[in-house]
Amino acid sequence: MSRKVLLPSSYGLSGVIVPLTTPFDQAGEIDYDAFLQQIEWVLGTGVHGIVVGGSTGEGYTLTEDELFELTRKALDTVNGRVPVMASIISDSTRGACKRAEMLASLPITALQVAPPHYIFSPSAEGLCDFYADVGKTGDRPVIIYNVISWANVSPTVAAAIMDRSHYVIGVKQSDRDLGSFIDLTRTIGPERVFGAIDGSLMSCYDLGIAGSIAAIATAVPAPSVALWNNCIARESVARDINGWLADFWMTLSTSNLPAQVKAAQSLQGLKSGFPRSPMQMATGNEVSRIETALQRKLPT
Image (cartoon, rainbow, N blue to C red; front, side, top):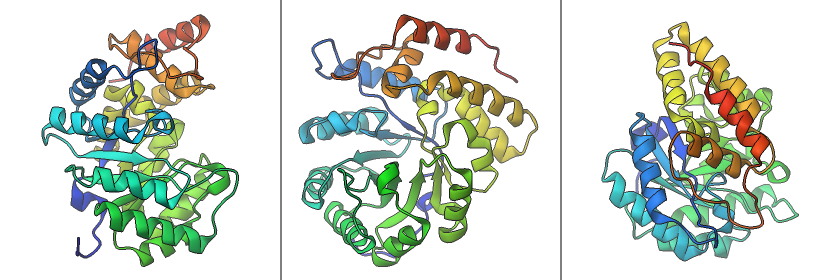
């Protein structure tokens, strides 16, 4: 692929992009029917894109073939209605490139790629090489998935990666430090940044970022879309919706997040399946707390 770097919005990547969960049955096998039902559920709320196999999707447990099949089925189901991204979580350039090569045969919009992170953090030069190699192999735009606390891609390194590779078009920033988030937007431009500070998305949106790729949107997509729409429209009700989402996130953001998100989905009538071992189902108390939070009236 030979083209000038464009902004994420040039590929239709903006607004609320949902990192899908991966439903498993009790034996740990993927429940593809439930997965496709989830896609229709989130699309019905007006979300602007989906991601397959991210952290919320327990992508770190997926085999290469499972990620490929989930992505293929997602593309068939979406049928062009919104952009579809696939996530790569691997601890080596070779492993990440192998997944990128497999996914290159599918018409995905972009790749969301986490840095290698097992125990040690790569050097800045190593990260630049890593993202350049994955982008070239996958022949797709790449969003840096900045989610690993001990392998955090700093704003300066993110800018260097983008200078090195025209494939890298943005950063999903999961660091909860809003100050670091602001530093990133100042360094690479807010239009290249996606927010994943789930309890403070309104503050992120106020910076003029491209959108969000956040677990809270997987659990409660309709309010998340409402917040984005109202922030864009600059309506005051957005503050009340943000408060609702922030309170809900405080309930949701305990350990074993994928199971908490799946519990929220189930309480809203979606077949969400089981987490994959060693992760456990949400406890009865956790489900009750989530149910109580969901029953709070959404501001309108």
